[in-house]
Image (tube, rainbow, N blue to C red; front, side, top):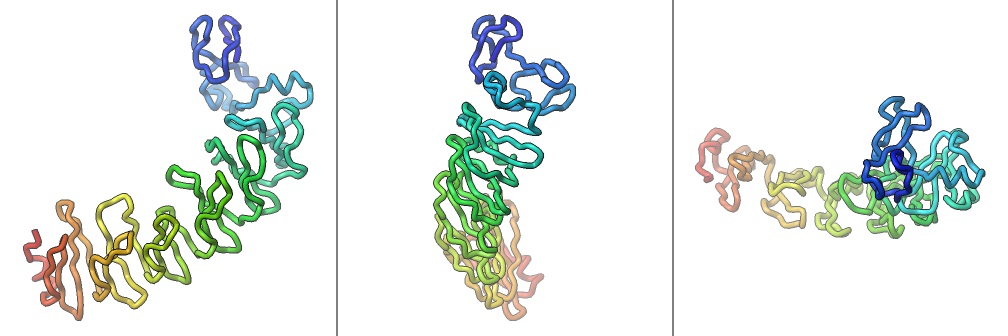
Length: 291
């Protein structure tokens, strides 16, 4: 990276010139405006700045930037992704030769921020490619995948209309492809009923009509068993309130977990270990001193 002030060379990761100390700037190839080295888009014309080292390409006179719609460089790797008229190729950054002897029909740009892998699709199937070497981590065998809402390298992948989980770094299947749905918090649906995974193993069997997410809360919400009865179960499978009630209402007064329990048209109450039997009317149970 050349300093526009003193013309000295700097590393690609530098933000300030190593010679004169001036902030490093870059010039837009489209409109010629100058902006910050960290800018992703030109503030004048809106053109996206590409991370690829264009000097390497122009020097070898094998490929020019303007021949292509889009060029994307791996964070720390030796390959680039080139999109030309909808056709996607992976090229070695130095030889500019294709890494694979075939092209791709889709690339998930939103996943480019992962430094170790990227997602590509070929003939309608997704696969995972090592973002450093450009080599395949998995074959192109997945129908779809879902992005993570949290850090980590395990992704929900779809194969033969069923969902499992794959480690994107190794390609290893962590959760088998047997589930109709896998939610971001590891709730899973199997044969129409919900369960819960903990460390890739079912901690709650798939026997529930509904399970509520409470991973980011200390509170536990009521669930309905396939028998039609309601109760409360923790993520690890511990039953807090037996599944024998016709209805459970959940409330959070002053940060406490309070449950109104209905059985045979009578109401009871449970709050943090304190329990009142189902012998009250709805209005009576609301007046009980649970605190």
